[in-house]
Amino acid sequence: MANTHALVIDDSRAMRLILSDLLQQLGYEISEAGDGQEAMARLEGGDTLPTLALVDWNMPVMNGLEFIRAVRQQPCYNGMKLLVVTSEAEVSQMVEALTAGADEYLMKPFSSEALACKLEMMGLQRTERA
Amino acid sequence: MSCISENSYLTLCALLSDQIALSLPADKVYLAEARLQNLASQHTRGDINALIEKASTVAEDALRTELVEAMAINETYFFRDPILSESFLDTMIPTLLDKRRADKTLRIWSAACSTGQEIYSVAMLLDQHFPQLRNWQVTLIASDFSQSALSKAKQGCYGLNEMNRGLPARNMALYFEQQGLDWQIKTEIRERIRFEKINLIREWPEELPLFDIVLLRNVLLYFSMDDRLRVLRRVREQTVSDGYLLLGATESLEKSAGFIPAIPRSHRPFFQPV
Ligand SMILES: C[S@@+](CC[C@H](N)C(=O)[O-])C[C@H]1O[C@@H](n2cnc3c(N)ncnc32)[C@H](O)[C@@H]1O
Image (cartoon, rainbow over all chains, first blue to last red; front, side):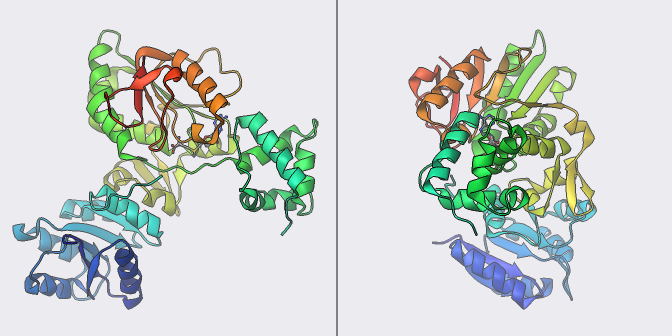
């Protein structure tokens, strides 16, 4: 399937593994990056735009918010959805992320069901749920 | 872990069917064991068979209530199924805004509201998309038989798991306040809702108004066919003739229930009185 490529951006290798695993189960192809800058480099170097990027908030070099701002400044990346995945559960931060151009916000820790539910809300995952 | 004997299971099934019309399939013994373990340790030293027996004696009203509440399936989440938003935004509210413009009243009932996510989703939808309703008289009633579900609904306080399921981040930022690790829906939304204890298979309060919209979602699927029809007929009487009924995504309707699809030939769980 085309159109199911996710970029997982998190400085924790463990977290990247968990997310990649869950997304693979949902049928996504995965690429990974350890911070915002590495993620930008992947976008610039890649042939196709990922459908979705999962963005951690606190990361070295270029953090989640900076990444979101950088991505949303470039119209060629408009087709990519941005899901912030973070343990920062402050309303002010959520507002900051949304204002910067994030599409959704998922708080850690989360269940696989919650992730699938968010993707569905973002128009990405149509699961026929009971 | 104590196991439920065949006899006790039959007693339990009869009790649940009698109290809330829950028809428990024969293969759900493990579920009953898991759900009743706690109560049994509090009341009958962990013995579930003894618990069931005790709860079915006449004098044990309070225990029986606890047991029935423990067995009820409360699963729910914000903005459950796309049909909820779609039907409100595209059809029901636009139509009713027009039809009720003279008396400016709107009455909505979440008839098995569980812990409140459904009615709060509706309240948020109305607030966000229909500001003109602010000078209407909008009645939002949410009911359930379960006192424990209702208390939680009234509080409107949710943990991370519940907040992560179905609630758009925008709504979270707009309508919720952090309370330690939990999130509480803002008072101004909470105050718009009237919570009532109503068992669908018992008497309904006399002062219950006629409704423009009834949400009866993911509750009838646990009922026997007879109970289902009985409840639907009463819901029909409680719905104005140009009102609407929403069921759960996987639920369908018998014709004799008095409702037909609101969108002709569609298979959506969205109906209007015949
Ligand atoms: C699975 S939840 C559905 C909640 C919500 N309507 C939804 O669709 O997400 C079912 C709810 O129905 C309630 N319920 C079950 N039997 C009932 C009865 N006889 N009268 C009133 N409520 C009942 C349960 O307590 C539970 O909260």
